[in-house]
Image (cartoon, rainbow, N blue to C red; front, side):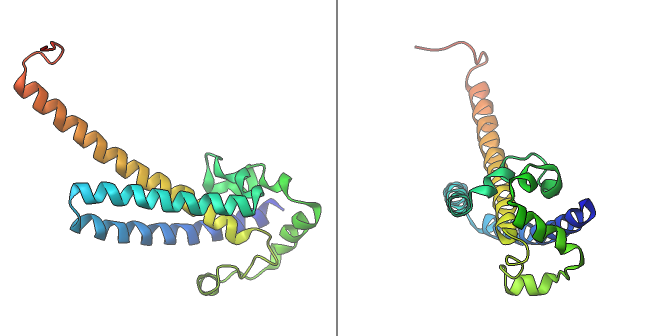
Length: 168
């Protein structure tokens, strides 16, 4: 059974990685053309939009919440409590997936293709993708904030030789 879950996880990781690379590339194009203020606004909007999608997904399928906070999303099927949260019938479907033919191109055309044979499959992919995309955007936002803080420190040091001495 572990081999089946690892094969499914590997397939999902490939899909998610492809989606993330594409999203990062598209976001990189936006970054090239926006000023800092516009960029900050759009980062926050993208985080909000992805968060709303993730919340709606979890609202529809509460079982997906099991995987959201698992630290290693690259092996979440086997190492998280997701498998134990499945009903016996759902778990049986995953066990029977040993010989299931997985096709990346077909899945791109129809994201819900495997949901009948693998319960929550598209939801798992979307949950992991959205979680990683939000983290990517937040790290980018953090970099921008860090750069702004460092710039402010330089300005403060330039105007005052002792940055701890306050002027009232």
